[in-house]
Length: 118
Length: 245
Image (tube, rainbow over all chains, first blue to last red):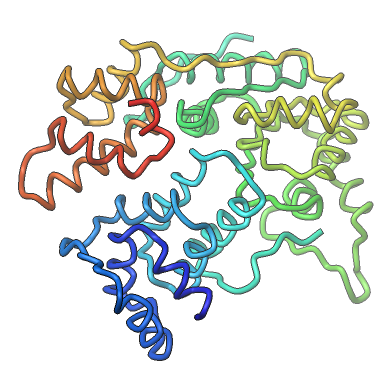
Protein backbone atom coordinates (compact mmCIF):
# COMPACT_ATOMS: atom_id res chain seq x y z
CA UNK A 1 0.00 0.00 0.00
CA UNK A 2 1.27 3.46 -0.85
CA UNK A 3 2.42 5.66 2.00
CA UNK A 4 -0.08 8.43 1.38
CA UNK A 5 -2.98 5.96 1.27
CA UNK A 6 -1.88 4.31 4.50
CA UNK A 7 -1.57 7.65 6.21
CA UNK A 8 -4.95 8.84 4.95
CA UNK A 9 -6.62 5.66 6.20
CA UNK A 10 -5.05 6.07 9.63
CA UNK A 11 -6.07 9.73 9.93
CA UNK A 12 -9.17 10.99 11.75
CA UNK A 13 -12.30 9.84 9.86
CA UNK A 14 -13.49 13.40 9.22
CA UNK A 15 -10.11 14.29 7.73
CA UNK A 16 -10.05 11.18 5.55
CA UNK A 17 -13.55 12.02 4.29
CA UNK A 18 -12.58 15.60 3.58
CA UNK A 19 -9.46 14.55 1.67
CA UNK A 20 -11.49 12.14 -0.41
CA UNK A 21 -13.99 14.90 -1.09
CA UNK A 22 -11.24 17.29 -2.16
CA UNK A 23 -9.68 14.75 -4.48
CA UNK A 24 -6.39 14.01 -2.76
CA UNK A 25 -5.93 10.68 -4.45
CA UNK A 26 -4.85 9.86 -7.96
CA UNK A 27 -6.91 7.06 -9.62
CA UNK A 28 -4.57 4.22 -8.58
CA UNK A 29 -4.34 5.57 -5.04
CA UNK A 30 -8.10 5.81 -4.87
CA UNK A 31 -8.44 2.18 -5.88
CA UNK A 32 -5.94 1.22 -3.19
CA UNK A 33 -7.78 3.34 -0.66
CA UNK A 34 -11.12 1.73 -1.46
CA UNK A 35 -9.57 -1.73 -1.28
CA UNK A 36 -7.92 -0.82 2.01
CA UNK A 37 -11.11 0.45 3.60
CA UNK A 38 -13.49 -2.17 2.16
CA UNK A 39 -13.37 -4.28 5.28
CA UNK A 40 -13.73 -1.39 7.68
CA UNK A 41 -17.03 0.00 8.78
CA UNK A 42 -16.03 3.61 8.28
CA UNK A 43 -19.19 5.55 8.98
CA UNK A 44 -17.93 8.73 7.34
CA UNK A 45 -19.34 11.94 8.65
CA UNK A 46 -21.37 13.61 5.93
CA UNK A 47 -20.69 17.25 6.72
CA UNK A 48 -17.69 18.87 5.04
CA UNK A 49 -15.17 20.55 7.35
CA UNK A 50 -14.97 24.34 7.57
CA UNK A 51 -11.66 26.06 6.75
CA UNK A 52 -10.51 26.37 10.36
CA UNK A 53 -11.61 22.83 11.21
CA UNK A 54 -9.76 21.46 8.19
CA UNK A 55 -6.60 23.38 9.08
CA UNK A 56 -6.90 22.27 12.70
CA UNK A 57 -7.19 18.55 12.00
CA UNK A 58 -4.24 18.81 9.63
CA UNK A 59 -2.14 20.74 12.13
CA UNK A 60 -2.89 18.29 14.91
CA UNK A 61 -2.48 15.15 12.84
CA UNK A 62 0.11 13.42 10.70
CA UNK A 63 2.75 15.93 9.57
CA UNK A 64 3.70 14.08 6.42
CA UNK A 65 0.10 13.70 5.32
CA UNK A 66 -0.42 17.42 5.89
CA UNK A 67 2.65 18.17 3.77
CA UNK A 68 1.24 16.08 0.91
CA UNK A 69 -2.09 17.86 1.17
CA UNK A 70 -0.41 21.25 0.92
CA UNK A 71 1.86 20.22 -1.93
CA UNK A 72 -1.01 18.74 -3.90
CA UNK A 73 -2.66 22.14 -3.78
CA UNK A 74 -5.79 21.10 -1.93
CA UNK A 75 -5.93 24.07 0.40
CA UNK A 76 -7.34 27.52 -0.08
CA UNK A 77 -5.30 30.59 0.99
CA UNK A 78 -7.32 31.21 4.16
CA UNK A 79 -6.88 27.57 5.16
CA UNK A 80 -3.13 27.86 4.62
CA UNK A 81 -3.03 30.96 6.81
CA UNK A 82 -4.82 29.10 9.59
CA UNK A 83 -2.61 26.05 9.21
CA UNK A 84 0.44 28.28 9.46
CA UNK A 85 -0.87 29.81 12.68
CA UNK A 86 -1.99 26.55 14.21
CA UNK A 87 1.32 24.84 13.59
CA UNK A 88 2.94 27.36 15.88
CA UNK A 89 0.80 26.27 18.81
CA UNK A 90 2.51 22.90 18.88
CA UNK A 91 5.93 22.11 20.22
CA UNK A 92 8.47 22.70 17.45
CA UNK A 93 10.14 19.68 15.91
CA UNK A 94 12.20 19.20 12.80
CA UNK A 95 9.30 17.62 10.91
CA UNK A 96 6.92 20.36 11.93
CA UNK A 97 9.40 23.09 11.00
CA UNK A 98 9.67 21.57 7.57
CA UNK A 99 5.88 21.52 7.23
CA UNK A 100 5.78 25.17 8.29
CA UNK A 101 8.23 25.99 5.52
CA UNK A 102 6.15 24.07 3.01
CA UNK A 103 3.08 26.01 4.11
CA UNK A 104 4.93 29.32 3.90
CA UNK A 105 6.16 28.50 0.43
CA UNK A 106 2.66 27.49 -0.64
CA UNK A 107 1.36 30.82 0.69
CA UNK A 108 3.89 32.57 -1.49
CA UNK A 109 2.76 30.45 -4.45
CA UNK A 110 5.88 28.29 -4.56
CA UNK A 111 6.13 24.54 -4.44
CA UNK A 112 8.81 21.91 -4.60
CA UNK A 113 11.67 21.12 -2.29
CA UNK A 114 11.33 23.01 0.96
CA UNK A 115 14.34 21.66 2.72
CA UNK A 116 16.41 24.19 4.56
CA UNK A 117 19.58 25.08 2.66
CA UNK A 118 22.78 25.98 4.43
CA UNK B 1 13.41 57.64 25.69
CA UNK B 2 9.64 57.73 26.15
CA UNK B 3 7.51 56.39 23.35
CA UNK B 4 5.73 59.25 21.72
CA UNK B 5 1.98 58.86 21.83
CA UNK B 6 0.69 57.99 18.41
CA UNK B 7 -2.76 57.08 17.31
CA UNK B 8 -3.23 53.33 17.57
CA UNK B 9 -4.34 51.45 14.49
CA UNK B 10 -7.99 50.44 14.75
CA UNK B 11 -7.24 46.71 14.89
CA UNK B 12 -4.87 46.66 17.85
CA UNK B 13 -5.89 46.73 21.48
CA UNK B 14 -3.18 48.39 23.52
CA UNK B 15 -2.76 45.82 26.25
CA UNK B 16 0.18 44.95 28.48
CA UNK B 17 1.94 42.95 25.72
CA UNK B 18 1.88 45.86 23.27
CA UNK B 19 2.90 48.35 25.94
CA UNK B 20 5.79 46.23 27.22
CA UNK B 21 7.12 45.52 23.76
CA UNK B 22 7.07 49.15 22.63
CA UNK B 23 8.67 50.28 25.86
CA UNK B 24 11.44 47.71 25.52
CA UNK B 25 11.97 48.70 21.90
CA UNK B 26 12.38 52.32 22.97
CA UNK B 27 14.78 51.30 25.69
CA UNK B 28 16.86 49.11 23.38
CA UNK B 29 17.14 52.01 20.97
CA UNK B 30 17.95 54.66 23.58
CA UNK B 31 20.56 52.61 25.42
CA UNK B 32 21.84 50.66 22.40
CA UNK B 33 21.02 47.39 24.13
CA UNK B 34 20.26 43.91 22.99
CA UNK B 35 17.00 42.75 24.55
CA UNK B 36 14.98 39.55 24.34
CA UNK B 37 11.22 39.52 24.70
CA UNK B 38 9.75 36.08 25.24
CA UNK B 39 6.14 35.08 25.71
CA UNK B 40 4.09 31.93 25.19
CA UNK B 41 2.59 31.30 21.76
CA UNK B 42 -0.70 33.05 21.08
CA UNK B 43 -0.26 35.90 23.56
CA UNK B 44 -0.04 38.51 20.82
CA UNK B 45 3.66 39.07 20.18
CA UNK B 46 3.32 39.42 16.43
CA UNK B 47 0.42 41.84 16.80
CA UNK B 48 2.57 43.89 19.17
CA UNK B 49 5.48 43.80 16.70
CA UNK B 50 3.14 44.95 13.91
CA UNK B 51 1.99 47.79 16.10
CA UNK B 52 5.56 48.74 16.97
CA UNK B 53 6.60 48.59 13.31
CA UNK B 54 3.97 51.16 12.45
CA UNK B 55 4.28 53.41 15.45
CA UNK B 56 7.86 53.64 16.66
CA UNK B 57 9.14 57.14 16.09
CA UNK B 58 12.81 56.30 15.59
CA UNK B 59 14.68 54.39 12.87
CA UNK B 60 13.85 50.71 13.03
CA UNK B 61 13.69 47.63 10.86
CA UNK B 62 11.49 44.65 11.47
CA UNK B 63 12.35 41.18 10.25
CA UNK B 64 9.69 38.49 10.36
CA UNK B 65 11.55 35.24 10.64
CA UNK B 66 9.35 33.33 8.28
CA UNK B 67 11.19 35.09 5.48
CA UNK B 68 14.62 34.38 6.91
CA UNK B 69 16.15 30.97 6.73
CA UNK B 70 19.91 31.25 6.44
CA UNK B 71 22.65 33.73 7.20
CA UNK B 72 22.69 34.64 3.51
CA UNK B 73 19.06 35.72 3.53
CA UNK B 74 19.71 37.66 6.72
CA UNK B 75 22.69 39.41 5.12
CA UNK B 76 20.64 40.11 2.03
CA UNK B 77 17.93 41.78 4.10
CA UNK B 78 20.36 43.93 6.08
CA UNK B 79 23.00 44.61 3.46
CA UNK B 80 21.07 45.33 0.28
CA UNK B 81 19.00 48.38 -0.53
CA UNK B 82 15.32 47.75 -1.37
CA UNK B 83 15.08 46.36 -4.89
CA UNK B 84 18.81 45.72 -5.14
CA UNK B 85 19.94 42.22 -6.14
CA UNK B 86 22.80 40.19 -4.81
CA UNK B 87 25.05 39.55 -7.78
CA UNK B 88 27.02 36.43 -7.01
CA UNK B 89 28.45 35.96 -10.48
CA UNK B 90 29.82 38.12 -13.33
CA UNK B 91 31.99 41.24 -13.04
CA UNK B 92 30.28 42.81 -10.04
CA UNK B 93 30.00 39.72 -7.94
CA UNK B 94 29.73 40.23 -4.23
CA UNK B 95 30.95 37.88 -1.53
CA UNK B 96 28.97 37.34 1.65
CA UNK B 97 31.73 39.20 3.51
CA UNK B 98 31.29 42.22 1.17
CA UNK B 99 27.61 42.19 1.94
CA UNK B 100 28.35 42.02 5.64
CA UNK B 101 30.72 44.97 5.31
CA UNK B 102 28.04 46.96 3.54
CA UNK B 103 25.49 46.15 6.21
CA UNK B 104 27.90 47.29 8.96
CA UNK B 105 28.66 50.47 7.02
CA UNK B 106 24.96 51.21 6.68
CA UNK B 107 24.42 50.77 10.41
CA UNK B 108 27.31 53.16 11.16
CA UNK B 109 25.94 55.73 8.73
CA UNK B 110 22.36 55.49 9.85
CA UNK B 111 21.82 53.43 13.01
CA UNK B 112 18.53 51.70 13.57
CA UNK B 113 16.86 49.29 15.93
CA UNK B 114 16.55 45.78 14.59
CA UNK B 115 13.41 43.96 15.71
CA UNK B 116 13.29 40.25 14.91
CA UNK B 117 9.94 38.53 15.28
CA UNK B 118 9.97 34.78 15.90
CA UNK B 119 13.68 34.90 16.59
CA UNK B 120 13.41 31.40 18.03
CA UNK B 121 13.31 30.18 14.44
CA UNK B 122 16.72 31.57 13.56
CA UNK B 123 19.42 29.03 12.90
CA UNK B 124 22.76 28.89 14.67
CA UNK B 125 24.69 30.75 11.99
CA UNK B 126 22.12 33.59 12.02
CA UNK B 127 22.73 34.12 15.73
CA UNK B 128 26.46 34.22 15.02
CA UNK B 129 25.91 36.93 12.41
CA UNK B 130 23.79 38.90 14.87
CA UNK B 131 26.59 38.69 17.40
CA UNK B 132 28.99 39.99 14.77
CA UNK B 133 26.66 42.92 14.03
CA UNK B 134 26.58 43.69 17.71
CA UNK B 135 30.35 43.52 18.09
CA UNK B 136 31.19 45.47 14.94
CA UNK B 137 28.39 48.01 14.76
CA UNK B 138 26.68 48.02 18.19
CA UNK B 139 23.40 47.33 16.46
CA UNK B 140 20.62 47.55 19.04
CA UNK B 141 18.27 44.58 18.80
CA UNK B 142 14.99 43.36 20.15
CA UNK B 143 14.63 39.61 19.71
CA UNK B 144 11.03 38.48 20.06
CA UNK B 145 10.09 34.84 20.41
CA UNK B 146 8.57 32.14 22.55
CA UNK B 147 10.16 30.14 25.37
CA UNK B 148 12.27 28.24 22.84
CA UNK B 149 14.29 31.40 22.23
CA UNK B 150 15.59 31.51 25.80
CA UNK B 151 16.36 27.79 25.76
CA UNK B 152 18.13 28.05 22.44
CA UNK B 153 20.24 31.03 23.49
CA UNK B 154 21.05 29.39 26.82
CA UNK B 155 22.14 26.13 25.32
CA UNK B 156 23.70 27.04 22.00
CA UNK B 157 24.68 30.70 21.91
CA UNK B 158 26.39 31.50 25.15
CA UNK B 159 28.48 34.25 23.58
CA UNK B 160 25.38 36.04 22.30
CA UNK B 161 23.52 35.32 25.53
CA UNK B 162 26.17 37.17 27.54
CA UNK B 163 25.64 40.27 25.43
CA UNK B 164 21.92 40.47 26.11
CA UNK B 165 21.18 43.22 28.62
CA UNK B 166 17.51 42.58 29.40
CA UNK B 167 15.70 39.26 29.17
CA UNK B 168 12.05 40.11 29.48
CA UNK B 169 9.53 37.36 29.99
CA UNK B 170 5.95 38.39 29.27
CA UNK B 171 3.35 36.61 31.36
CA UNK B 172 0.15 35.34 29.75
CA UNK B 173 -2.77 37.76 30.00
CA UNK B 174 -4.90 37.90 33.12
CA UNK B 175 -8.52 36.79 33.05
CA UNK B 176 -9.99 40.28 32.69
CA UNK B 177 -7.47 41.23 29.99
CA UNK B 178 -8.14 38.03 28.07
CA UNK B 179 -11.87 38.76 28.12
CA UNK B 180 -11.24 42.31 26.92
CA UNK B 181 -9.08 41.06 24.02
CA UNK B 182 -11.67 38.50 22.96
CA UNK B 183 -14.38 41.16 23.01
CA UNK B 184 -12.13 43.44 21.02
CA UNK B 185 -11.66 40.65 18.48
CA UNK B 186 -15.43 40.55 18.11
CA UNK B 187 -16.30 37.40 20.06
CA UNK B 188 -19.35 37.50 22.27
CA UNK B 189 -18.40 34.86 24.81
CA UNK B 190 -20.84 33.62 27.44
CA UNK B 191 -19.54 33.17 31.00
CA UNK B 192 -19.76 29.39 30.71
CA UNK B 193 -17.76 29.42 27.49
CA UNK B 194 -15.19 31.80 28.91
CA UNK B 195 -14.69 29.61 31.98
CA UNK B 196 -13.98 26.62 29.74
CA UNK B 197 -11.70 28.67 27.51
CA UNK B 198 -9.77 29.99 30.47
CA UNK B 199 -9.34 26.49 31.82
CA UNK B 200 -8.08 25.26 28.47
CA UNK B 201 -5.85 27.98 27.14
CA UNK B 202 -5.38 30.52 29.95
CA UNK B 203 -4.28 33.95 28.80
CA UNK B 204 -3.60 33.13 25.17
CA UNK B 205 -6.00 34.99 22.86
CA UNK B 206 -4.55 33.33 19.77
CA UNK B 207 -5.30 29.86 21.03
CA UNK B 208 -8.74 30.96 22.25
CA UNK B 209 -9.47 32.37 18.81
CA UNK B 210 -8.60 29.05 17.16
CA UNK B 211 -10.96 27.21 19.50
CA UNK B 212 -13.76 29.74 19.03
CA UNK B 213 -13.45 29.67 15.24
CA UNK B 214 -13.64 25.87 15.29
CA UNK B 215 -16.69 26.08 17.55
CA UNK B 216 -18.27 28.64 15.21
CA UNK B 217 -17.83 26.29 12.26
CA UNK B 218 -19.21 23.31 14.15
CA UNK B 219 -22.25 25.37 15.19
CA UNK B 220 -22.71 26.72 11.66
CA UNK B 221 -22.60 23.23 10.16
CA UNK B 222 -25.42 22.24 12.50
CA UNK B 223 -27.31 25.45 11.85
CA UNK B 224 -27.24 26.61 15.46
CA UNK B 225 -25.68 29.45 17.42
CA UNK B 226 -22.33 28.75 19.04
CA UNK B 227 -22.67 27.44 22.58
CA UNK B 228 -20.80 25.39 25.12
CA UNK B 229 -21.52 22.13 23.21
CA UNK B 230 -19.87 23.48 20.06
CA UNK B 231 -16.88 24.65 22.10
CA UNK B 232 -16.58 21.25 23.72
CA UNK B 233 -16.77 19.76 20.23
CA UNK B 234 -13.92 22.01 19.10
CA UNK B 235 -11.73 20.74 21.94
CA UNK B 236 -11.75 17.31 20.27
CA UNK B 237 -9.42 18.70 17.64
CA UNK B 238 -6.83 19.78 20.20
CA UNK B 239 -5.45 16.66 21.89
CA UNK B 240 -3.30 18.66 24.31
CA UNK B 241 -6.34 20.61 25.51
CA UNK B 242 -8.42 17.48 25.86
CA UNK B 243 -6.14 16.26 28.63
CA UNK B 244 -6.88 19.39 30.65
CA UNK B 245 -10.67 18.96 30.55
